[in-house]
Length: 317
Image (cartoon, rainbow, N blue to C red):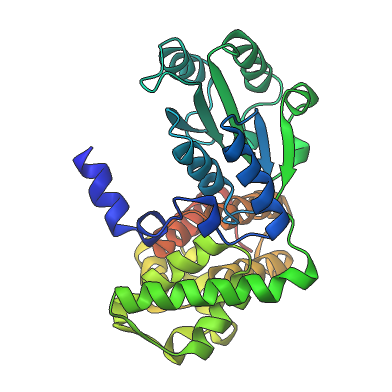
């Protein structure tokens, strides 16, 4: 518990996570839907769909905390095998709630669960424990969730219309300024606006990036160095030679770059730098680590892991 408290206090995404639906940054119609669940005091099985970092897990937690329900969070990408899922759900759902009400399981990244084995098992768990336990599933890709789970949940998509983007970005700018003021970090508003615009609507990514940049003591134009200005020729050279330390030094020297832009440059250069049979594993590695980049705090470690996998799995020309 103590280590979790230290972690939550250190990570801005946890420290400043909204605890009430009214404090979330979402379109008003979505907030009204979630607030109605709270007012009724009963939350149905839900499937929350939307892009990474948009607030699905935050909403799930906020609703359950507002109705004072007991709940656990299971990450489908990390604890997604059938036995782990069965044991975690059974141990939690089979006991009586301390508050006397309905208990809930938040299953994060449910689209990572195997559609042929684990998702059907989850459907059975939902039916077995329906009398005592509700389920809230989150996913980035709703088409990866099997129909039997769709039919057992109210599906809510986190869609942000063109007319709502400006207002939500404005709200998040105000929230970010308040966080930086509280953390005593200097900033230039035009730089914050550029970071928010770049990653919209991935609020988690924005906060993680700003926390990473904050070690400089100020958020200014110096953080906006782009990998577009970085020559990947030197990176490819050390990777081709299998020089792990050389690769790490390159990553460290370009720590302020946008990793997504780098991934795109490697993707675009695939046919020039890779043997044909190595292009598929390169693309898969880039896609995998680009997705993970939305969740990790240390982008440097994530990038180094991606490049290491490419060095191991791919053969350069």
